[in-house]
Length: 333
View 1 (spheres, rainbow, N blue to C red):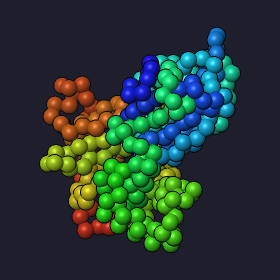
View 2 (view 1 turned 180 degrees about the horizontal axis):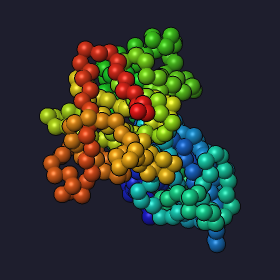
View 3 (view 1 turned 30 degrees about the vertical axis):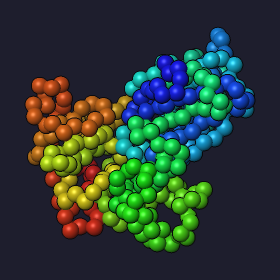
């Protein structure tokens, strides 16, 4: 449970910093992460907890989610991000399993639904900081609102094939050059980056496999879970899983200018179970054995995967040196 400013809980890789003050009437949400997200809240009024969502939040955005101060001392929060960012950030910690719906919803009794409709929420106890009841969703980088917006732009520019690294919320020369080129390529005005629809434009570009960068395209009828390896500081770092829906493309985030990548993907069913052809999984890879694990992962040590309780997979080597764009297609045999 989160009781005051400066304490935190993890929601699938997103550090959720929650602070609140009962001094004002309205409950505010602020997204201080570099990710676009949809947020659901839970409100306790004994003996029940109600939930409502989804509140669409761009990086650096604050919005009112409740007109009055919550009656109880706790606010519950769950956040999700678009699949283009990689594997869905399913909550890894929290204080309550509460009901949600796929579309916008308001549920009076959020404990009364099947397990398949429940998600884990983190709880915050209001503290009086003088600014009104506020829930801040933050990353470890601890951005303010302006830094979070810029970091969110940097992240999507990288995914769209424009080198705005590092993702740090600082407007350095590389970020300025990448943003200027993106605006020129999109035939947008110089002030478009501050516009209300700019993140929609960035998302569309990041989902488009044309242009610079590396992409996966799923030409099968199944969902494919993909993993990527990149050489960093002399070691291969694998990251996954990236969900690539049937008939769609996804551009994983890359920093710097790598010349070689390692790619692996496997088809899964609606319950995320690996689809097999005979005894072998339906997969796309190669001969370089690297470590993975069942959940979301980032691994740099690939010795004795099984001995360390990890899985392993054969990754394909993708040479992208000299190629402005590279797309790996997952096709059924």
